[in-house]
Image (cartoon, rainbow, N blue to C red; front, side, top):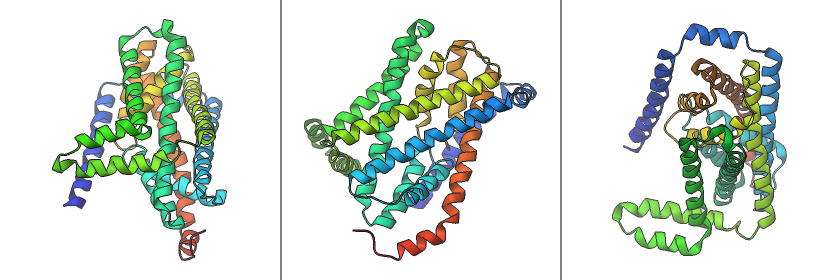
Length: 326
């Protein structure tokens, strides 16, 4: 029954992605879309692809920093292998959650310390979300005169509210205990256990302020790179709008893409890109082309990550048979 439910969930997400893509393609001239991509400025596309590498680099070292903070000081090569596997699987499993699960599984088996590894992955994802929200708030404050949209303001308010709730639940003992008290329903057992585990695993970082600050700085760098990539892609397509739109829209689009209702954010990301950039005067076909090229970058880096992961299977098996590091 559990396997059937998992299969049904994956089938549902694949269906959502396909349905959204079909809807978008039926409302956009495919020939025009292909012509736009075909005539894109290739040197600028290569520049955008190169900039994307730094996003992965910052994410890698952010996670490595957290692992070291809990006493898992592995060689960089071994962390790269797990991280690469996470990039690959995030393309096919729901949102980035699937990739996080796979790198957690891989490194937990290697270290024999699943709780510590889970804590680092959760905080890694959380710090990334904090960086995303901070950047969107700063960009909205600076660029409000360009936007002045209640929908944008409401979107930023939602992702900020969700972040505040998560932070309070994980780092505030009083609120955590209040939530626990109200979870008396027989069906709430799994939810209560999940919240308890998350709280205990993340709470250990509360007094490690230096680690948290460094991770937030790294997260801001990651979130700054993403709008820059899209800005360069837009330039390659002849889209010339103020860069502030990218720093406002991309964090919101990124937050929407995190919703585990599609495969790799496909379809969801494209629809959100078209919707928000229309407010900056960008046509549907140009916005869709920008989103598809961005997704193509993800595919290429995912393929590279998958190659690294597959080619090191034998190496990981040998390591797995050895006792975990003390």
